[in-house]
Image 1 (cartoon, rainbow, N blue to C red):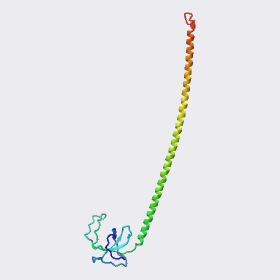
Image 2 (image 1 turned 60 degrees about the vertical axis):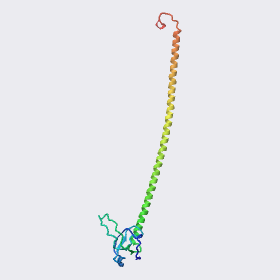
Image 3 (image 1 turned 45 degrees about the vertical axis):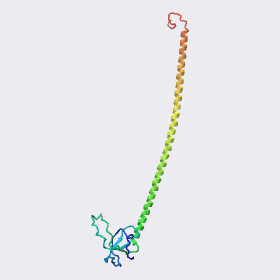
Length: 196
């Protein structure tokens, strides 16, 4: 058991009522009344440790409206408190170890999730880049085929135009020859020669 103390800066803030441990006698505070036993519930260096504190309040405790909304208690009258336990109980040590283990497991799980997420993101990025490369190659191939088809069609149209122009020129030549032959005819007879 520690010495009595009145330093409220290190007095626990979260506590609950507890029973007096075996082999420990109740003590009186500076008011002269028997102290009440409290147990620390805050997750701190004093978790689970029991201490004596003054049973009197500086002012009347406020009435609780419901079991879920309890107003804070006023400070003790004489600010007396004294530690019963000087070390944490075994269950608290085990609880801290278990919380630490769960925290590390949670951290490890979070790291594995982040790593898997990063790998999935990298895989998606790689797939997208591969898809872009494939699409670019496909578009280049389509452009090349379209260009080749365009050149082929232009050549076909050019050949057709040349054939049409040659046909026209042949017909023009035939028409000129026929016209020249008609003009060079003797003109004898009343009717054209083909009717005689």
